[in-house]
Amino acid sequence: MERRLLVCGSSTIICPCRKFRRGLLYLNMSKEQYELKQSEKEEKRKKEAWSRMIERLVFGAIIFLVIAGFVFLAIKYKGSSPEQPVLGMNAVSASDWTKGDKNAKIILIEYSDFQCPACVAYEPTVKQITDEFKDRIVFVYRHFPLSQHKNAESAAMASEAAGRQGKFWEIHDLIFENQKEWSEALNAEDIFAGYAQKIGLDINRFKDDLNLKESKDKISGDSRSGLEAGVNATPTFFLNGRKISPRSYEEFKNAISQAINNP
Image (cartoon, rainbow, N blue to C red; front, side):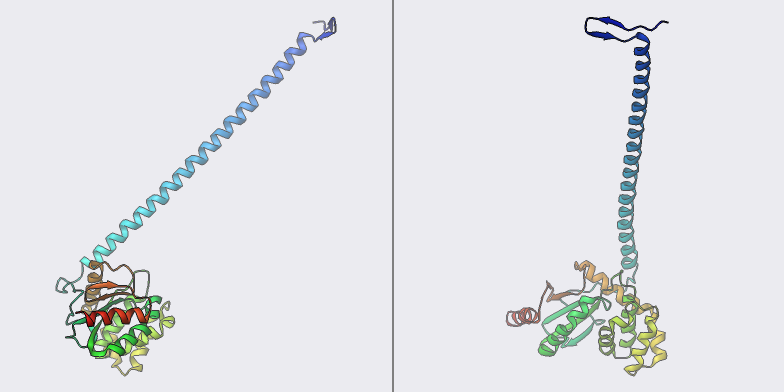
């Protein structure tokens, strides 16, 4: 086909062949842009689908952990010995470890975990309270080992083993005073055996008593009573059955003094 420029006035008309080629080029560019947009949309869709899948997996994992936690608690505490009674918040059990007068009208109960840093921080205050009020109150120590503390239950078992030889409070103090030494140790029971020797226990009997079912049931009974009373952290204190949260020695002292003066 002959190509010519047609001039009409001041306007230049381009040959139809050129228009056709430009049209093809435009179509090709439009197709590439379309495919690029489609590719971007597909990539975005894949990313959104992946994000939704991750969210579902995370949510599913959280649900699984929550259910597993409830199952663990149900097995641990419902599966304990049926002979172990549920302990009261305003009464002293024959199996309780106590200081002061067991017949006192003022009953202070602590639910504690030997590996709990907050429990260690409260120890000087608790000692000061028991030293000051002596036989005007009865102080009760109950076990509440938390699952995240890997050696807490072993420490509780060690205290029970020492208690069977009449030295619960002696090893109780050593375990708390040296918490940093054994809390993350792989040989915690060996360390507790060292404390047992230090306070003059029959070491062979102590080691034999470290895994007694009776002691495990005692610890489970303490924990179960705490759960039923709403304990969810350590230390937790009850004064004549009422939960208290003293933040200092003075608050502790005032709460007990009021209970004594207003029976």
